[in-house]
Image (cartoon, rainbow, N blue to C red):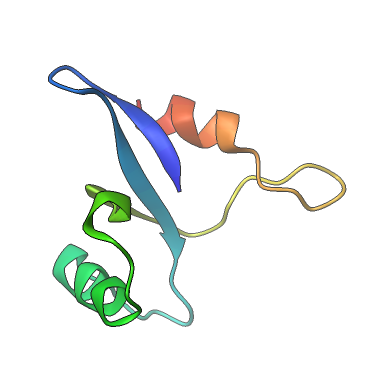
Length: 72
């Protein structure tokens, strides 16, 4: 999850997801799943972005900075 700029609130939560083997995920499916996992409404993402791969550094850590730039 990353924060992306939002003109109204300043920033909103964005889930960046890699689906496996051609699977698809809609925003509503994601929210429904997170609600069944008892995630509080304040922590629900407000945006969903599907990507083929996540940018990583040599040690395998996700480069959130690059994702923020991509979806800003």
